[in-house]
Length: 517
Image (cartoon, rainbow, N blue to C red; front, side):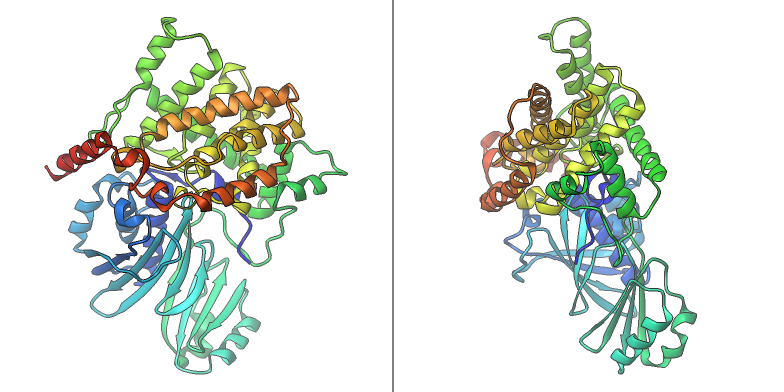
């Protein structure tokens, strides 16, 4: 069974640079695992994308190349060298070929890698599942599963795989030890397995590979969470009457196997990064390779001069969202929450509302926990990947998370938070993903702002006890079904909607000419 979603893995994170978490951050994590598979030495790489996937038309413009190649170089998702990835790859002497090959991949974000150096050749197939999360499906022809949350030790053996695995299960403190085709032993553990722990079997091990974790919150075979859906949470809380933020604290403490104080500390750290993005964006950003200029400072000036229609909370939220999105588009550091493409909606809306009502930082952090828990229910039952579920999976999810968080800031009840999240998600069903100029800037900015407007409206409606009618879990499950019914061309492929308008194609051509200069 796959590990339960984590607020800090799946929902609020990664802390990153780049246009897209599902393209850039996830690709970087795949690249990091590939680097480990090659013992830190990649000289040549063949990257194959399948014609039916999203990466054929988006891998360069939306950051997959940036992420994957930076992973080959061992960078972190927030590394300041990411924009220089092509120069750094050339300096490292890594030769990369990209090919379009029909290998009938089931997932639109599939990476098939053939890696070589002077001593060996390896193959790795992995997918990006949304919000920077990944799954490795195959290594060297062996079907397996890695999510990047374990220390992975791969033992290629000549014989006696089952007996070696049985012996290791007795001697090692490992989460799982799995035999694949009687030739590969996969060890998943919390700590790296040492050579001495394997010495008894060294004569039968012809190749040893160690892959380090790439996720901030580790996976585990014995993780027990108190609930995984909203309905299960309500049942769990029936005799406890905890607030929604306290339930988020209970959940993430169990999921991460860390103290509640550690959860709060981590959320404070993320809130600081989110606020920093707001401050940086409002001061003005510069970056040549983007569609939209720096617009948030001008919006603030108009706001200060009373040139805008009065709406204090919403206008503050708009300025914050725009600032965060502009930091993302200028390769600054943001928190993907739940994705980079929707990184403005939930943080900008929640922080903007908190500042409008003069909420304390502690109350802000509690509101972020509330939104994070709503995101867990979405990650568990649907997806954050626009390539799978459209923009409803990104900005729609951000709206649902923000709506619940705003109710929390206003002192509303648990039921009112859930009602607000339900209404906001209901209002988001069917949103497509059709980037202009093949970039994650527009209509993304407008849809982040729309998501926040939706969230604010639904929060106030729920605080007034408007009926949401459909329970949250049922809305999330519906969102998943709707996403799977959206045409492939409208799922972040740059093949439909606004992406193929003449104006969008001219913008795309202009950006291509700029990059070639």
